[in-house]
Amino acid sequence: MRLERVWLILRKGSQAAQRQARRCAQDLRSQGVVVTTAVSGLAVNPFPGLLATEPELPDLAVVLGGDGTVLGAARYLARFGVPVLSFNVGGHLGFLTHERRLLRLQGEANGDSAGHDPADNLWQRLRDDRFAIQQRMMLEAWIDRGDGVPQPGDVPSGAGPADGGEEPHAALNDFYFRPSLEELSPTCVLELEIDGEVVDQYRGDGLIIATPTGSTGYAMAAGGPILHPGIEAIVLTPICPMSLSSRAVVVPPRSRLSVWPLGETSRRVRLWKDGAHATVLEPGDRCVLVQGRHPALMLQLEQSPSYYRTLTHKLHWAGSLTAAEPSRN
Image (cartoon, rainbow, N blue to C red; front, side):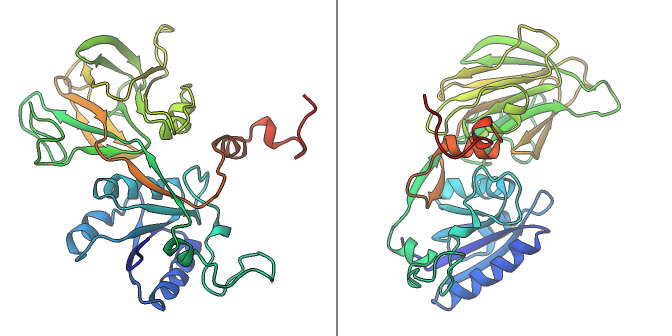
Protein backbone atom coordinates (compact mmCIF):
# COMPACT_ATOMS: atom_id res chain seq x y z
CA MET A 1 0.00 0.00 0.00
CA ARG A 2 1.16 3.49 -0.80
CA LEU A 3 1.21 5.53 2.39
CA GLU A 4 1.80 9.16 1.51
CA ARG A 5 -1.36 10.83 2.83
CA VAL A 6 -3.41 9.68 5.84
CA TRP A 7 -6.51 11.05 7.53
CA LEU A 8 -6.78 10.41 11.27
CA ILE A 9 -10.43 10.45 12.36
CA LEU A 10 -10.93 10.39 16.12
CA ARG A 11 -14.00 10.04 18.29
CA LYS A 12 -15.26 13.31 19.74
CA GLY A 13 -14.96 13.58 23.51
CA SER A 14 -12.48 10.73 23.92
CA GLN A 15 -9.20 11.71 25.58
CA ALA A 16 -7.78 8.27 24.78
CA ALA A 17 -8.50 8.81 21.07
CA GLN A 18 -6.90 12.27 21.22
CA ARG A 19 -3.73 10.93 22.82
CA GLN A 20 -3.50 8.06 20.35
CA ALA A 21 -4.10 10.41 17.41
CA ARG A 22 -1.23 12.67 18.51
CA ARG A 23 1.11 9.70 18.76
CA CYS A 24 0.03 8.33 15.36
CA ALA A 25 0.38 11.75 13.69
CA GLN A 26 3.86 12.27 15.14
CA ASP A 27 4.94 8.79 14.07
CA LEU A 28 3.61 9.19 10.52
CA ARG A 29 5.02 12.69 10.02
CA SER A 30 8.44 11.47 11.11
CA GLN A 31 8.24 9.14 8.09
CA GLY A 32 7.28 11.92 5.68
CA VAL A 33 3.56 11.13 5.55
CA VAL A 34 1.11 14.03 5.17
CA VAL A 35 -1.38 13.73 8.04
CA THR A 36 -4.74 15.44 8.53
CA THR A 37 -6.53 15.01 11.87
CA ALA A 38 -10.27 15.54 12.35
CA VAL A 39 -12.83 14.94 15.10
CA SER A 40 -16.04 13.04 14.35
CA GLY A 41 -19.24 12.56 16.34
CA LEU A 42 -23.04 12.70 16.11
CA ALA A 43 -22.97 16.51 16.26
CA VAL A 44 -19.63 16.93 14.46
CA ASN A 45 -19.24 15.84 10.84
CA PRO A 46 -15.76 16.60 9.46
CA PHE A 47 -16.10 14.90 6.08
CA PRO A 48 -17.84 17.57 3.95
CA GLY A 49 -15.14 20.03 5.03
CA LEU A 50 -12.31 17.57 4.43
CA LEU A 51 -13.59 16.60 0.99
CA ALA A 52 -14.00 20.26 0.04
CA THR A 53 -10.67 21.60 1.31
CA GLU A 54 -8.11 18.80 1.15
CA PRO A 55 -6.10 18.88 -2.11
CA GLU A 56 -6.11 15.07 -2.47
CA LEU A 57 -7.95 12.07 -1.14
CA PRO A 58 -6.00 10.04 1.42
CA ASP A 59 -4.44 6.68 0.77
CA LEU A 60 -5.93 5.53 4.07
CA ALA A 61 -8.33 6.73 6.75
CA VAL A 62 -7.39 5.59 10.26
CA VAL A 63 -10.36 5.72 12.63
CA LEU A 64 -9.77 5.89 16.39
CA GLY A 65 -13.04 5.36 18.21
CA GLY A 66 -15.95 2.95 18.24
CA ASP A 67 -18.39 1.61 15.67
CA GLY A 68 -20.22 4.93 15.39
CA THR A 69 -17.05 6.71 14.29
CA VAL A 70 -16.39 3.98 11.72
CA LEU A 71 -19.93 4.26 10.34
CA GLY A 72 -19.54 8.00 9.86
CA ALA A 73 -16.31 7.52 7.92
CA ALA A 74 -17.72 4.74 5.74
CA ARG A 75 -20.78 6.78 4.73
CA TYR A 76 -18.60 9.47 3.17
CA LEU A 77 -15.48 7.61 2.03
CA ALA A 78 -16.94 4.47 0.44
CA ARG A 79 -17.91 6.22 -2.79
CA PHE A 80 -14.33 7.45 -3.21
CA GLY A 81 -12.77 4.03 -2.63
CA VAL A 82 -10.81 5.18 0.43
CA PRO A 83 -10.01 2.19 2.69
CA VAL A 84 -10.74 2.49 6.40
CA LEU A 85 -8.60 1.02 9.18
CA SER A 86 -10.28 1.27 12.58
CA PHE A 87 -9.19 0.70 16.17
CA ASN A 88 -11.36 0.57 19.26
CA VAL A 89 -9.96 3.56 21.15
CA GLY A 90 -12.50 5.15 23.46
CA GLY A 91 -15.37 3.23 21.86
CA HIS A 92 -17.79 0.71 23.29
CA LEU A 93 -18.96 -2.48 21.52
CA GLY A 94 -16.45 -2.41 18.66
CA PHE A 95 -17.90 -4.88 16.14
CA LEU A 96 -16.13 -3.09 13.28
CA THR A 97 -12.88 -2.16 15.00
CA HIS A 98 -9.55 -3.84 15.75
CA GLU A 99 -8.21 -4.17 19.24
CA ARG A 100 -5.81 -1.42 20.27
CA ARG A 101 -2.92 -3.91 20.67
CA LEU A 102 -2.65 -4.11 16.86
CA LEU A 103 -1.91 -0.38 16.67
CA ARG A 104 1.82 -0.83 17.03
CA LEU A 105 3.90 2.24 16.27
CA GLN A 106 7.64 2.49 15.65
CA GLY A 107 9.69 1.44 18.67
CA GLU A 108 6.65 0.18 20.57
CA ALA A 109 6.03 -3.33 21.79
CA ASN A 110 2.40 -2.75 22.84
CA GLY A 111 2.59 -5.51 25.39
CA ASP A 112 4.43 -8.01 23.19
CA SER A 113 7.57 -9.83 24.27
CA ALA A 114 10.91 -8.04 24.37
CA GLY A 115 12.02 -10.08 21.35
CA HIS A 116 9.49 -8.38 19.10
CA ASP A 117 10.99 -6.96 15.89
CA PRO A 118 10.87 -3.12 16.24
CA ALA A 119 10.64 -2.80 12.45
CA ASP A 120 7.38 -4.73 12.44
CA ASN A 121 5.19 -1.71 13.14
CA LEU A 122 1.74 -0.97 11.76
CA TRP A 123 2.86 1.40 9.00
CA GLN A 124 5.53 -0.96 7.69
CA ARG A 125 3.01 -3.76 7.73
CA LEU A 126 0.70 -1.68 5.54
CA ARG A 127 3.53 -0.77 3.15
CA ASP A 128 4.38 -4.47 2.84
CA ASP A 129 0.71 -5.27 1.98
CA ARG A 130 0.33 -7.57 4.98
CA PHE A 131 -3.39 -7.04 5.31
CA ALA A 132 -6.66 -7.91 3.60
CA ILE A 133 -9.43 -5.62 2.35
CA GLN A 134 -12.97 -6.63 3.22
CA GLN A 135 -15.85 -5.21 1.20
CA ARG A 136 -18.97 -4.42 3.20
CA MET A 137 -22.29 -3.91 1.45
CA MET A 138 -23.93 -0.52 1.90
CA LEU A 139 -27.40 0.91 1.29
CA GLU A 140 -28.50 4.06 -0.50
CA ALA A 141 -31.78 5.94 -0.09
CA TRP A 142 -33.33 8.86 -1.89
CA ILE A 143 -36.62 10.67 -1.51
CA ASP A 144 -39.44 11.43 -3.91
CA ARG A 145 -41.39 14.33 -2.39
CA GLY A 146 -45.13 14.38 -2.84
CA ASP A 147 -44.98 18.11 -3.62
CA GLY A 148 -42.17 17.64 -6.14
CA VAL A 149 -39.83 20.01 -4.28
CA PRO A 150 -36.65 18.16 -3.23
CA GLN A 151 -34.81 18.94 -0.02
CA PRO A 152 -31.03 18.67 0.57
CA GLY A 153 -29.98 15.05 0.21
CA ASP A 154 -32.97 14.19 -1.99
CA VAL A 155 -32.78 13.10 -5.60
CA PRO A 156 -35.49 14.76 -7.74
CA SER A 157 -38.63 12.76 -8.48
CA GLY A 158 -38.16 10.21 -11.26
CA ALA A 159 -34.38 10.17 -10.94
CA GLY A 160 -32.18 7.46 -9.53
CA PRO A 161 -28.95 7.46 -7.56
CA ALA A 162 -26.92 7.00 -10.72
CA ASP A 163 -28.36 10.03 -12.50
CA GLY A 164 -26.02 12.56 -10.93
CA GLY A 165 -26.98 15.65 -8.98
CA GLU A 166 -27.42 15.30 -5.25
CA GLU A 167 -25.77 12.26 -3.70
CA PRO A 168 -28.30 9.94 -2.04
CA HIS A 169 -28.21 9.16 1.65
CA ALA A 170 -25.83 6.27 2.44
CA ALA A 171 -25.63 3.81 5.33
CA LEU A 172 -23.33 0.95 6.26
CA ASN A 173 -25.48 -0.36 9.11
CA ASP A 174 -29.08 0.58 8.49
CA PHE A 175 -31.82 3.02 7.63
CA TYR A 176 -34.79 3.19 9.93
CA PHE A 177 -38.09 5.01 10.08
CA ARG A 178 -39.47 6.28 13.38
CA PRO A 179 -42.36 8.65 14.25
CA SER A 180 -41.29 12.29 14.23
CA LEU A 181 -43.66 13.95 16.70
CA GLU A 182 -43.12 13.03 20.33
CA GLU A 183 -46.30 14.76 21.51
CA LEU A 184 -48.40 12.23 19.58
CA SER A 185 -48.62 8.49 20.06
CA PRO A 186 -45.20 7.05 19.10
CA THR A 187 -46.57 4.90 16.29
CA CYS A 188 -46.74 5.20 12.53
CA VAL A 189 -48.08 3.34 9.50
CA LEU A 190 -45.57 2.49 6.78
CA GLU A 191 -46.41 0.83 3.48
CA LEU A 192 -43.66 -1.32 2.02
CA GLU A 193 -43.26 -2.11 -1.67
CA ILE A 194 -40.64 -4.57 -2.93
CA ASP A 195 -39.81 -4.55 -6.65
CA GLY A 196 -43.09 -2.81 -7.47
CA GLU A 197 -45.29 -5.08 -5.33
CA VAL A 198 -46.95 -3.91 -2.12
CA VAL A 199 -45.91 -6.41 0.55
CA ASP A 200 -47.18 -5.08 3.89
CA GLN A 201 -48.37 -2.12 5.90
CA TYR A 202 -46.46 -1.91 9.16
CA ARG A 203 -48.29 -0.33 12.06
CA GLY A 204 -46.06 0.14 15.07
CA ASP A 205 -42.96 2.00 16.22
CA GLY A 206 -41.23 1.93 12.84
CA LEU A 207 -39.21 -0.13 10.39
CA ILE A 208 -35.48 -0.98 10.13
CA ILE A 209 -33.82 -1.77 6.79
CA ALA A 210 -30.35 -3.14 7.46
CA THR A 211 -27.31 -4.60 5.76
CA PRO A 212 -25.64 -7.79 7.05
CA THR A 213 -23.19 -5.52 8.89
CA GLY A 214 -26.13 -3.76 10.55
CA SER A 215 -27.91 -6.99 11.42
CA THR A 216 -26.06 -7.04 14.78
CA GLY A 217 -27.21 -3.50 15.61
CA TYR A 218 -30.68 -2.01 15.98
CA ALA A 219 -32.19 -4.76 13.81
CA MET A 220 -30.95 -7.45 16.19
CA ALA A 221 -32.33 -5.54 19.19
CA ALA A 222 -35.72 -5.43 17.44
CA GLY A 223 -35.72 -9.22 16.99
CA GLY A 224 -34.21 -9.50 13.51
CA PRO A 225 -31.83 -12.25 12.35
CA ILE A 226 -28.03 -12.06 12.39
CA LEU A 227 -26.47 -12.27 8.93
CA HIS A 228 -22.83 -13.03 8.23
CA PRO A 229 -21.19 -10.00 6.54
CA GLY A 230 -20.06 -12.27 3.70
CA ILE A 231 -23.70 -12.55 2.64
CA GLU A 232 -25.21 -9.84 0.47
CA ALA A 233 -28.83 -9.34 1.48
CA ILE A 234 -31.17 -6.77 3.00
CA VAL A 235 -32.94 -7.33 6.32
CA LEU A 236 -36.34 -5.71 6.96
CA THR A 237 -37.32 -5.69 10.64
CA PRO A 238 -40.47 -4.03 12.02
CA ILE A 239 -40.11 -2.23 15.36
CA CYS A 240 -42.76 -3.35 17.89
CA PRO A 241 -45.42 -4.15 15.25
CA MET A 242 -49.04 -4.26 16.35
CA SER A 243 -49.66 -7.32 14.19
CA LEU A 244 -48.17 -10.70 15.05
CA SER A 245 -47.98 -11.44 11.31
CA SER A 246 -45.46 -8.64 10.71
CA ARG A 247 -42.11 -10.42 10.84
CA ALA A 248 -38.53 -9.77 9.84
CA VAL A 249 -37.86 -10.56 6.18
CA VAL A 250 -34.57 -11.10 4.32
CA VAL A 251 -34.61 -10.09 0.63
CA PRO A 252 -32.02 -10.25 -2.18
CA PRO A 253 -29.52 -7.40 -2.43
CA ARG A 254 -30.84 -6.25 -5.82
CA SER A 255 -34.31 -5.62 -4.43
CA ARG A 256 -35.75 -2.13 -4.85
CA LEU A 257 -37.61 -1.09 -1.73
CA SER A 258 -40.10 1.77 -1.45
CA VAL A 259 -41.55 2.99 1.85
CA TRP A 260 -44.49 5.40 2.18
CA PRO A 261 -45.70 6.97 5.43
CA LEU A 262 -49.50 6.76 5.62
CA GLY A 263 -52.10 8.62 7.67
CA GLU A 264 -52.80 12.24 8.49
CA THR A 265 -50.47 15.03 7.42
CA SER A 266 -49.34 15.44 11.03
CA ARG A 267 -47.97 11.88 11.05
CA ARG A 268 -44.47 12.76 9.95
CA VAL A 269 -41.77 10.11 10.00
CA ARG A 270 -38.04 10.63 10.50
CA LEU A 271 -35.51 8.73 8.44
CA TRP A 272 -32.27 7.86 10.24
CA LYS A 273 -29.04 6.53 8.72
CA ASP A 274 -26.66 4.63 11.00
CA GLY A 275 -28.19 6.45 13.97
CA ALA A 276 -27.71 9.90 12.41
CA HIS A 277 -30.66 12.00 11.27
CA ALA A 278 -31.20 11.99 7.49
CA THR A 279 -34.51 13.72 6.73
CA VAL A 280 -38.23 13.96 7.58
CA LEU A 281 -40.97 12.39 5.45
CA GLU A 282 -44.63 13.33 5.35
CA PRO A 283 -47.55 11.24 4.10
CA GLY A 284 -47.29 11.36 0.31
CA ASP A 285 -43.48 11.22 0.29
CA ARG A 286 -41.72 8.07 -0.81
CA CYS A 287 -38.32 6.74 0.26
CA VAL A 288 -36.59 4.41 -2.20
CA LEU A 289 -33.80 2.17 -0.91
CA VAL A 290 -31.37 0.03 -2.89
CA GLN A 291 -27.99 -1.61 -2.51
CA GLY A 292 -25.21 0.97 -2.50
CA ARG A 293 -23.14 1.33 -5.65
CA HIS A 294 -19.90 1.41 -3.66
CA PRO A 295 -19.04 -1.01 -0.83
CA ALA A 296 -17.17 0.17 2.23
CA LEU A 297 -13.53 -0.94 2.13
CA MET A 298 -12.40 -2.15 5.55
CA LEU A 299 -8.79 -3.14 6.22
CA GLN A 300 -8.40 -6.41 8.10
CA LEU A 301 -5.15 -6.99 10.02
CA GLU A 302 -5.86 -10.31 11.72
CA GLN A 303 -4.54 -13.30 9.80
CA SER A 304 -7.38 -15.62 10.81
CA PRO A 305 -10.36 -13.44 11.72
CA SER A 306 -13.42 -15.21 13.06
CA TYR A 307 -16.81 -13.52 12.81
CA TYR A 308 -18.28 -16.10 15.18
CA ARG A 309 -15.60 -15.46 17.78
CA THR A 310 -16.44 -11.78 17.56
CA LEU A 311 -20.15 -12.53 18.07
CA THR A 312 -19.42 -14.78 21.02
CA HIS A 313 -17.19 -12.18 22.67
CA LYS A 314 -19.13 -9.00 21.92
CA LEU A 315 -22.59 -10.40 22.63
CA HIS A 316 -21.47 -12.41 25.68
CA TRP A 317 -22.85 -15.67 24.35
CA ALA A 318 -22.49 -18.74 26.54
CA GLY A 319 -19.38 -19.84 24.68
CA SER A 320 -17.48 -16.83 25.97
CA LEU A 321 -18.35 -17.67 29.57
CA THR A 322 -17.19 -21.28 29.58
CA ALA A 323 -13.67 -22.62 29.87
CA ALA A 324 -11.32 -22.01 26.97
CA GLU A 325 -10.84 -25.74 26.36
CA PRO A 326 -13.34 -27.31 23.88
CA SER A 327 -16.13 -29.58 25.04
CA ARG A 328 -15.97 -33.34 24.49
CA ASN A 329 -18.57 -33.65 21.74
